[in-house]
Image 1 (cartoon, rainbow, N blue to C red):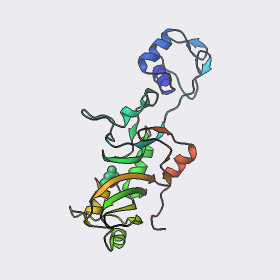
Image 2: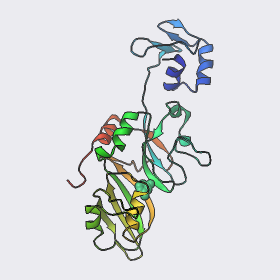
Image 3: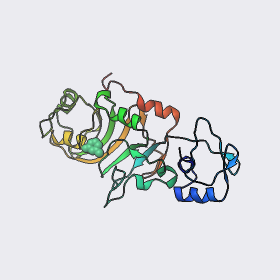
Image 4: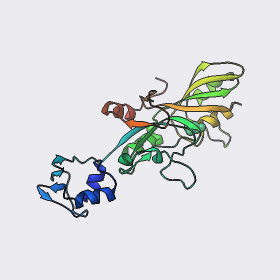
Length: 242
Ligand code: URA
């Protein structure tokens, strides 16, 4: 791997900043001062020091973001701010991407990583990773919604959803609050499921993925690294109806 990639992935700034750092003579590989950014080093064998301190290479980054409304779950967008734009350069150098999509107006738990394998296993329809959403809907919870969602509901395009688990938090004539757990990620799925029973989702927030819960102390638009334990909670898939 090129030494400039190693150093930027270890938190020493952009490739341009790293180039300056190398030029200043601050970097050694196995004791030799290295100035050429194209120099190759092997994370399994070589010892890289910056100002005498070891720069331990890391390949992956795993972040939990509390996504705010108004930003797009994508790496780039020509018109709108993306969740990647909200990251500091320190994390952007890892070239991370959001795991799946939340709508522009949906808030809450979003995993951002550069680990393609993890992303694939969380999104694979075969893995049935449950995702729980908190929603405010207009009106009361229609009769039989619980049973209908549990059986799988037919959306407006004819698609029958996988079984979903509905929990009612507040059931009132004007506005109700629910938690809905689904194991797939079809486009606008939660909104379309409620439309199919005659209700509109007025607010949507993802609160859980696998067994990993949104850290409610994270302000909207901010993020932090996942702990090892949280990472393991994420990969656990389980039966929603257990
Ligand atoms: N379902 C939706 O309708 N929107 C989201 O953002 C996520 C799930």
